[in-house]
Length: 620
Image (cartoon, rainbow, N blue to C red):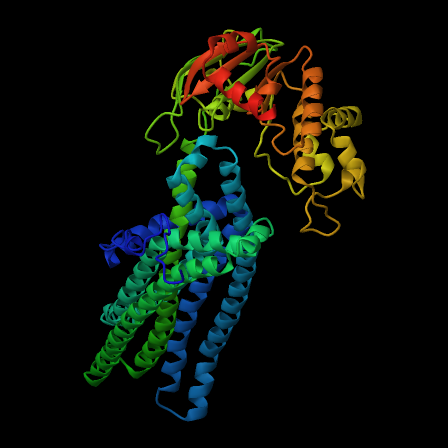
């Protein structure tokens, strides 16, 4: 079995480079055109994070360039005095004023650069906070159906793993690019003053490095983009090997060896891709450095020719050497910053693209107010299809729920019960058809306004790593009577009484003094959460799935008692629990096939009667 081929689902090694052509046509000019946009986006984000620190960083860096140029020009005066005719002491004395200017320029440049560094160090954490808040503000607001879209998941992973992390780095790189460009501009201005022919010669030393930086960044991004599915699969397998929840089954089914084989298969293929990337990047860097060295040599040759033909004096030549060395340092920093800005800017662009897509997935403003109550909830000809699905999950479904009724949805797995319940709760919107509270079309009201009027007790409820109190109140504050009343109705008060710190107990063993609950205990907490909401419409989706028979019976009795005068929608496979419902809707492959009370459906002798009889027979 060790040699058995592994099925890796969406991960197939031949597809890992499916996106490597994404940037195949990107060249230096493309990068040059892209950088201004990146710089604008980064500066816009930095300004939103802190206008004061952004302005201070830019202004101080500009002043640093001014003092650099001033110091180089003053250096010409120093060298001119030293290379002039006359006794050495006289030449030194003549050079002192210019030398003082050089020293003053150096001190001022150091001071403003230190100030710029301080402002930039303040800016970085503010940009990180702003970026993270924007991401999570959007992910918590998009329509729920977005999480059923695999393209949304891929975009979200790119934004979370690299995009957010690169935001402050992109701002830093942008400032570094601006700083280096200011330095180069200062040197270029000095060289232009000294002799115009020196200025274009600088390009010979920088263009090869620029080519190598762009090529290396393109390789890096294309490879990482192609490896996103592999990284996700590694993370998933790693969770199975390292997390507490699957640990018991990993051991009981002796899954360790199989999972390690799967992890190793993905990791080795990823390793081969990364080694190939390192080889190609090294070749590109060596070629760029070799050509860059040749360009630098040509610059110095040209400078020597100018001296030989007496086109420039010796003092100017000396200043030019210093300027060229300063420019080469600035050019090196510019190339490094440009490389990082371009490479990390691609990931930052993923973040911006995700944010733009997420904003389109957020429902627009809706001004219609929710009614104070309802006489009936109606769904008319509702059809809904999950993203990427070939067939609808619901097909032209119509139901009616009157105020104060207990309604049940019944059907086999995959029949559409939970999907329909989520549409009624405002979590999904139908592709076609309408849902009304009396005469109010729910498409015209704010989803949050609807959700505040409904409560959902879900089978796959979240086990929040919060205190027992917050697991019930969900951050609302209705007072102690409401909290204790909801816990008592759900039977969660017995669970909480047994906890070491009562309602203040943290329900997560990963934290100090935290406690873990059993599945049935968590189920009671989730039911209490729904009861605490005290909503107009209570939706119970398999609320007793984790309870034993006695606890299940007690809970259904509490739900019936709690439902007195309230409207309850019940979804369950335990058909004995729905026989007292006012009306039962039977779903089959996304359609309503039967509806009525228990006696009516038994008389029809259809799917409900068949399922009920199967369960009843099993108990006899």
